[in-house]
Amino acid sequence: MKDKEKYVFDPHGAHPHDAYAQFAKELGGTWDGQELKIKTDWCKIEAYSFEFLNEFIIAILGMESDRSITTRHSSLSKEKTITIRLGLGATYKSNGTVKKFNNAGILILNSTQIHDFEFPAGEWSQWVSIRFSLNFFRKFAGNKKYKLKELFENDSPWINYYSQNAEIESRVRALIKNLDKKHRKHTFFFTKAMEIVELLKGKIENDADKFKSSIHPEDLKLMLELRDTHLSDFTVIPNLTELSDKYGMSVSKLNRLFKSIFDKPILQFYNQQKLEEAHRQIVYTNKSLTEIAIDLNFSHVGHMSSSFKNHFGYAPSALKGKHMDYLS
Image 1 (tube, rainbow, N blue to C red):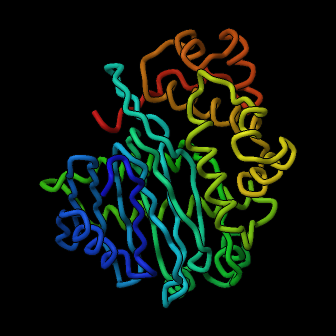
Image 2 (cartoon, rainbow, N blue to C red; image 1 turned 30 degrees about the vertical axis):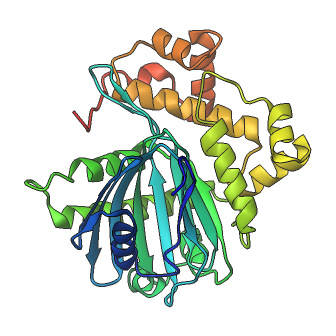
């Protein structure tokens, strides 16, 4: 492989555990049926994956590389499945240390949506993946109509994005914390994953206006790249003119395409993510509101507080005393 050459992996619709075995073989790593370990001179990849009832898989994955890695999903699996991919924002510990992630939010897609995920070089990425067959979901869904059920049973290719909230993120962090092999409780993965699905049911019922179907894979790839590469640094306001030049389309077209996947035009999405990062820092660190406002490039703490209250419905001070540190 040439120095810094992009690495592309395509499992061609294989079962995730077969894909891990193939991944390990290609890069000289190990896969023992639950844990994937790969360490080369240019990347470190870890995955933990647990399957329940032959139809429900919970995986926690992390990777860091000195070149971009693309996982390509260009072939359809034999069985209709749903995948829920939950990323984290930065992880902050009470001692002030920071571990940055580039993929906060929730992506849900079905197995007929062809797509690529590209992980940029030099970034530590960590996420939780919940994958289950449509038949498995129907066993628990019941007869009542609701938006999550309508989404899952839509046969067309689709992908939907939702912002993370504190309830769901706390369970994602709890899953990651439970990875320690000596103290691992396997049923914990199943119960927390089911809780996440149930919380998504309520969130989507309140949030979703319409579903995004038949998104072109190249459009999806470009907009995911834009989000992860250009909207994750809250100290720099995105320059729409520069982004327009980079992606070779007008600002209005770029905003329309971005909104077709992420519900909001670029700057609105960026500002929402910035407020959610402020929420995360208030909960997971001991930093003062002034420190957070400065670090996130708000003009002043009053601006952050008023914007925060407009978005969440309560002031930042309402979170005082609710500090959590899942990874200490």
